[in-house]
Image (tube, rainbow, N blue to C red; front, top):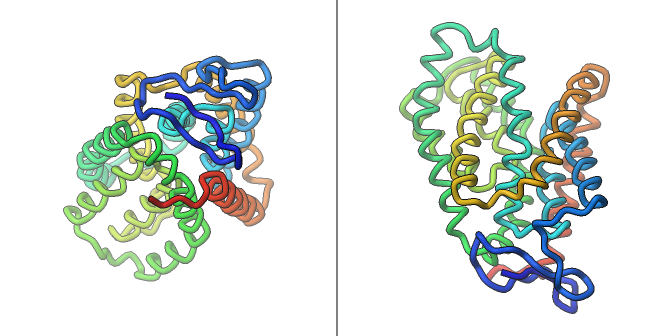
Amino acid sequence: MACGRDPAGRFHLRGEGVGCICGGSAQDGSYNCKMLTLHQAGVLFAVAVVSGMMNAVAGGGSFLSFPALLLVGVPPIQANATNTVALYPGTLGSIGAYRNELRGGEARRVLFPLLATGVVGGLLGAVTLLFTPQQTFLRLIPWLLLAATLLFAFSRKITSALGSRGGEAALTTKGGAVAQFFVAFYIGYFGAGAGILMMALLALLGMTHIHRINAYKTVQAAVCNGIAVVAFVAKGVIYWRHAGVMVAGALAGGYFGAWYAQKMKQEHVRWIVIAIGAGMSAYFFWKTGFRTR
C-alpha cells in the first residue's frame, strides 16, 4: 500500500492492506514510513510530551498525537493503533494515583459488569478497525475528530446535566453494562473523547464523587484499550519505533503535566484542546477533500 498526496495536496492511498508499508515522499514517493528519521523522532517526541501534558491536565492528547503520526507518513489504521500503544502506559500509570478510590465493594460491584462487556466491545472495535479499508478510515478521520471535539467541548454541560440527578441512577447495572459495550467498541475503533462517554455513563449509574468517577473511568479505559492493544500487536500493525519515541514523550509530559495541573487554569487548557481539535478536524476535512463516499 502506498500513500501520498494528489496534485491538489489531498491525501490518497493505493491498496487496502493493513500490513503493508506506506510509501510516498513529497519528492519521489519512495519514503518508507516504518523508517524514522531523527527529525521525525524529535517531532513525535515533542508532540507526545505535549499530548501527555494535555491528558494529565484536561485530556484530548490524541487530537495532537494521532494527526502527528499521519503527518509523518504513517497510514491511518497503523497510526491509530500506534497512537493507542503510545499513550497506553500513561493510562496504566494513572491507575496507581487512584488506588485509594478503587478499594472496597463498590468498585467490584460497579466495575466488574462494565469491564466484562468492555473487553468484548473493545476487542470487536479493534477488529473492526483492522478490517476497515484504509481509504474508508481516512475519510472517517475528520468526522471522528469533529465528533470527539464536540463531545469534549460540551462535556461539562453533559456531566452537569447528568449530575443534576443528585445521585439518582438512570441506568441499572445491566443497562450500564450494555452501554459500556458500545462505548468500548468506540474505544477500540478510535477512542478520542471516550473518557467523557465513560464519565457520563458512570453518572447515569448514580455516581457523583468526581475522583471515584475518574478512577473507574481510568480502569475502564485501561482494560478496553489494553484488549485493543493486544489485537493490534497480534495483527502486527504497530510502528514500534514511532511508538517507543512517543511513549517516552508521553510519560515525560504526563509527569510534568500532573505537576503543573495544580498551577494551571484548566479552563485555558480546555479551550486550547478544543481549538486544536477543531483545527485538526478542519485540516483533515480539507486534506481529504470533504469526500464522504
